[in-house]
Image (cartoon, rainbow, N blue to C red):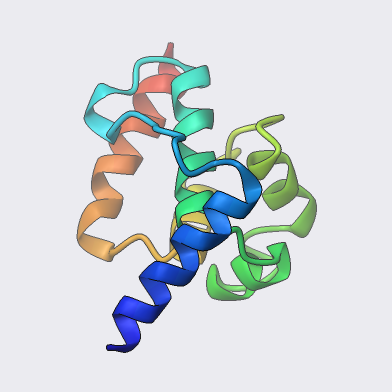
Length: 113
């Protein structure tokens, strides 16, 4: 029941923010910085666009994910600078651990090109 309420609240939040129809590519189909940036933004929105301090706290604190970096990722101005920042952001957006490897591969592919 609680999961259903959480899901509905997140959907309502996306509707309120005008991002309900927003779609990002799955990690396996990300080929460039723009795709990765959009996909990370979609993760944040699907989590209900929580305060950045919440993302930071869930991701392990300011050392792992500075607030300014989280803001730049969410505003699509930057990508995580390293894998630790990526994982912290993913944890902040509650991406399950078993899915994080796919995101690491996508990030590595984009950063190499």
